[in-house]
Amino acid sequence: MTKEEVARARWLFGPAPILTSEEPHRFEQFFIELATCLQPRDFIETQLMWHVTCESWNLNRFTRHAAVAIERRYQDGVRQELQRARLQHAQKKEASRQEIRSHRPADIAALAELERTMDSTADDMKEICKRKASERDHNIAFERSMAFQEQLDRLINSATRRRDDALKLLETYRAGLGAQAKAAAEQILEGEFKEVPSAPALVPPEQEASDDAESIKAVIDEE
Image 1 (cartoon, rainbow, N blue to C red):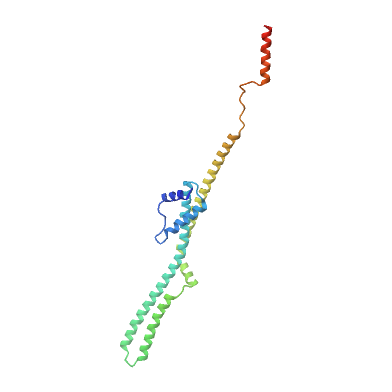
Image 2: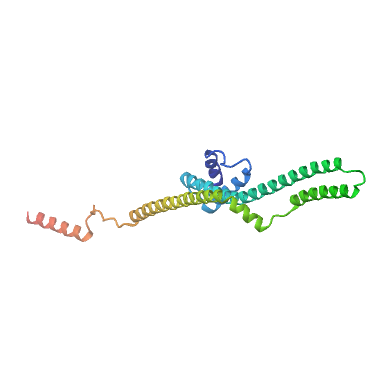
């Protein structure tokens, strides 16, 4: 099929099965690259190639979201840690107010210590936000997302089977057409080169013709 024919077939398949967080042009380029590799010869092969494209896209999506799930669990842990830090900060702030109310102006050292405690809590929150994830952090996040990872693994296995089945159907379809085309070509060639039996001659050979003429002359002389 030409590129234009493949494009018309692609239009019949409808919108790309992508999420709003995914880029449509990436899917279309993915389809074009597969078409370049598989070289569909008719609409049925293009349809099978479409199924290969969709399942391959699903495989990429499931694999990508397996990593996203781990990162999401890690970020959830960071937010929970920040929430605890903010709560501690609010508690210390309220405690400092109570201390200030109960201290006399002469207790300058105690007030300064409370202020340092407040500043250190705020610094801890900033440090949490800036901290780069370690492998241990992601390992903990992976453990927390294990149930989801197992579900993704089942989806990956199912998508792999469907993609492989589509490829096998494409291979079977091509092999069937190839065998039919080969048999038809062989029949045509055999018909063209088969020796045709010669038809009976309308004019007898020259020797036979002369013999017949002499016989007829002999009969006439006898008469």
